[in-house]
Image (cartoon, rainbow, N blue to C red; front, side):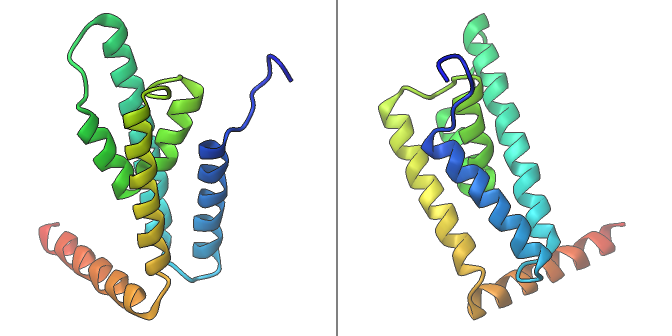
Length: 138
């Protein structure tokens, strides 16, 4: 497999996590909106990395590393893992990689908490408030 695509630990974790998110929603443990949120934010985070890599190559304005970490912390870390592997961006800076793993661990911990009674109640209440706000606006 010298020239073929190989899975690394972050990418494998991202794939397994997204499968778990999808199954959790399909089995009604979490709302489908949460699954959509993870996939949307992962895709958006991936695009942020693509944009930043392009800016680095062109010598243009760059995305702050803290912005990339916030996107990962909020749920976009699977997209960041794909970007590290596919476009080889931010994949060798040790400090950045350590911070990436911290944001990933925090997000996975929060996701697991959402499966507890308290977390499920928090998520349900939050989604209802968001839906009410959207209905009020429109």
